[in-house]
Image (cartoon, rainbow, N blue to C red; front, side, top):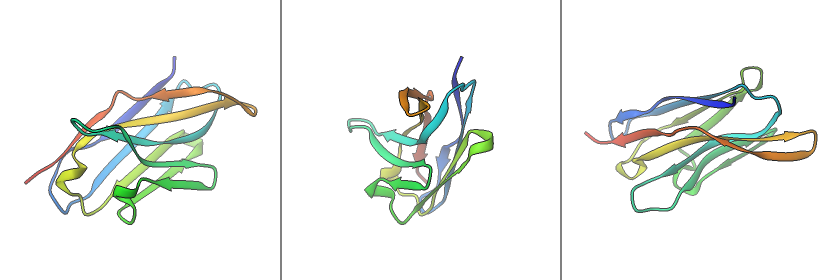
Length: 119
């Protein structure tokens, strides 16, 4: 059974840093893209950051403040966001899109981590 094990998050001070990690366990296919989305109350879900091969994409709200990296051997992706703002408060969910050869299989999701930016 596939699981995305997320860690980090919680309460972050304004101006502080957020560190999240996500490990895919039980994956039998190739992970194509792995990263994070977030959803704040009353807002649509939005991409935070994703990495697939040499391609890295950041959502506009975190560009210049976020760094995502991936350890393929560990099926783990790491996210750091600096200069956190109250508007970064959201539930952050890890995702992993998998394929078999060149055939897309689907996307797995983590349960989500609450991140609250407040003093």
